[in-house]
Amino acid sequence: VQLQASGGGTVQAGGSLRLTCEGSGTLFSFDAMGWYRQAPGKERELVADISVRGGTNYAASVKGRFTISRDGGKNIVDLHMNSLKPEDTATYFCNARYDNTFWGQGTLVTVSS
Image 1: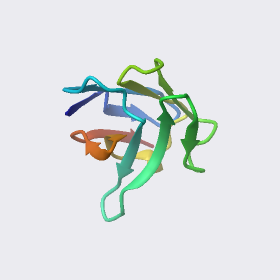
Image 2 (image 1 turned 90 degrees about the vertical axis):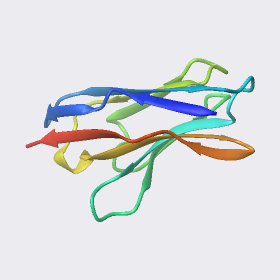
Image 3 (image 1 turned 60 degrees about the vertical axis):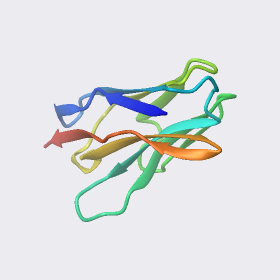
Image 4 (image 1 turned 180 degrees about the vertical axis):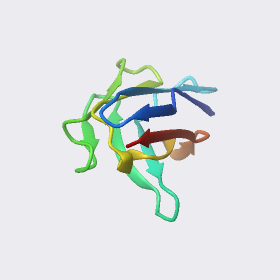
């Protein structure tokens, strides 16, 4: 199983970015897919995740600004990030779960003030 993440970059505060993660190497739909992030010197934290049925969870710090979406049972997940703040700066990691937990490579998001 591989998770390929894309879409990171640098944006000014108040701007928007979209992250995409595509899973491959399995015939099954992941039970859940999501995004975690890790800022320098901090622990990795959940940003948002979405189940195969569409149920979502968001970190309190991103609610109302970020939207996670997934096309049904497809193993592709998007994270639309709006009203970005400098504190959103981190390396973002795609995550998927089906029996085991899988991680993609990180993609850096930098929000300048």
